Amino acid sequence: MFEKNHSFINYQSFNSFIFIIVLCIFTSCNEQKPVNNEIVQQVTERATNPWNRQMVDSCTRLLQNGDVVVRRGHDITSTMLSMLNQREKLYSHCGVVLIEHGYPFVYHSIGGEDNPDARLRRDSVNFWFSPANNLAFGIVRLDLDKHQRDSLSQVVHGFYRARKKFDLDFDLKSEDCYYCAEMVYKALNRATADSTYIEPLTVFGVTFIGIDNLYLNKHAHMVCQIRFK
Figure: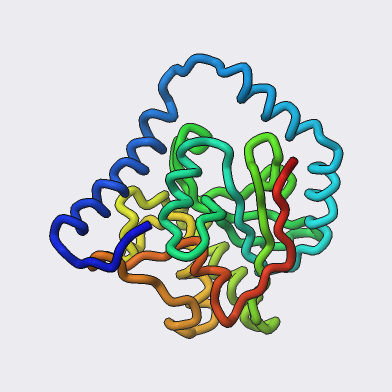
């Protein structure tokens, strides 16, 4: 979507795009909107389609500690967030899977009306993958050894205990708040003790992590990708 032009005008355009995304997440999502019967019907059909439920259940059984999960929401905010990806604009959100007492949970950084305090969240995989709120999801596996996976658990749990907030500025330099891909990127690089394990992109002079950076790299492969019906 972005041309590699480092002019002042393009830098301002990038910042404007970020502002629009943030505005949509934290303001317009909370406005009263007329009910669109067609959208309601689509959501109902996805949520009640037995194939979709079967895919969630089947893929949940594949999850391992330290996997990264990605998804695409069904709203306009998700569409806009997916456009930040530079190579594949398939997904709008991501998180880290940690297996706790035999069940996988997703730790992720999110804002908006569903998470008004904007703190790092811990959700069940069943809820996180829900076809009612998503169009698609995927599971990413990285070449982490057991020590690195254990380290990743410790790092993510540390972020969660610190109650890290969602990063409104999409600023990789900040350490008190993270946007979704930033949280995963920083957790992986710390767990592996390798600052280049996942590498960011620089566009228009702005350095950032897109969700596609997390799986389109030499350390990762897709375990499964599901598009709901």
